[in-house]
Image (tube, rainbow, N blue to C red; front, side, top):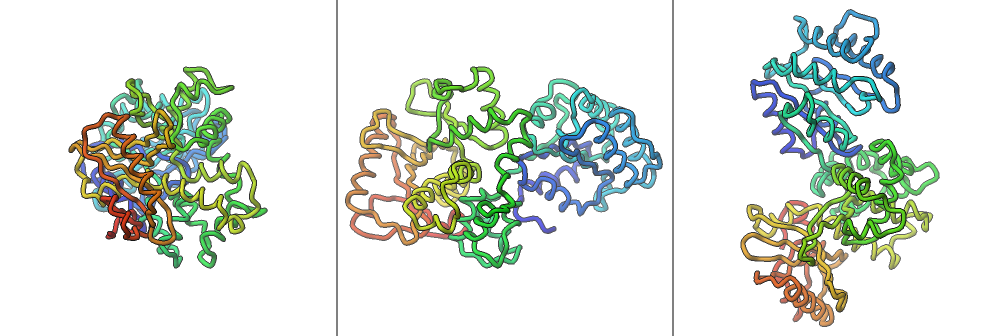
Length: 477
């Protein structure tokens, strides 16, 4: 199989194949993350039936495409089904036929319904027909593996995973497919024939956010920076409209989502719900809650607890590198090219913040480097209530074993140097954190930096150093 990474996901699929029970697997995740590729490549397209919804089409067109798939897999009926109940009835007849295709190793009947939300056009009766198909037939077939997939994550969660109707508690397994890690990005570049350094892989992650589709679009004869120009800044940029299309493919009325996420992208540590409500033209309480929930479900924002307040308010933060890049550079259009921007003070400021976001997306690798993979942690950013001296901490790992890793994330082309002034700043941060949180836990200052730490008289303040190698899952300091 030509699948990069995805080890946990492949194990889930294998468990479904080997279970000997009816399996209803739901695969979801944002657009371009590789959901369809994973399923197709795993099964080498050996399905008993495969059909995909098509965007923006009415019920009749969805049924026509379904009928084309029925005929492709052996159905003799040429007439387009009148409705979804008939469409699923004809699918059942196909799967009960003697010549139905089976997965060779397990004798499974594998049915893959891709982009399910697009099939559910208004008043089409699609969901009721799917309920009826599974509850009256599929759930009794020990040889059936039904896989449904979709990019409209909120639709999948509301209508399939947390469904309170006919599909309530019927889903047997689910996979939320996330963007590639740095290590997986590196493997994808190598598989595509690129010769890249780890610094270049990090640079690509800070822009493309580990989305496999975007990496696949990079031309190997160009550098990462040149590919960013070609794909996002040129006159015919292939990803020039991707940011808007990303949201328009997920939400029927995307403007409110776009407005909110662009506001949230303006503050590194994020906003509380109350802070968002105080802003001009913010949606009302109930609508705001729904938008925040759906953005979180789709992976565009993360929610964490703010431990500055006794009520432990939730903070919403944008951790998606591609979204942040588009908001900061494509929406504003202050720069004509990316290669022309590189090396400016603004570039280094952006790179430093984007690297902090990359760290937030690699908590598993950070914990592994610290040797605490099995220790329960709470992860959050922190900033002083008083604002005294601008005390902020990029990442706090609050551990169950009475230790807190206070993490500073620094992108530097050379080993990072701690000066006397910066040492004082770090001491001040630690003191402010202990005073305001009133924690009695041991504080360990942890530096996460690309090229390691330069040793001098001030570097001893750091107890742990995590380098790029360790963010990639390999060895380091």
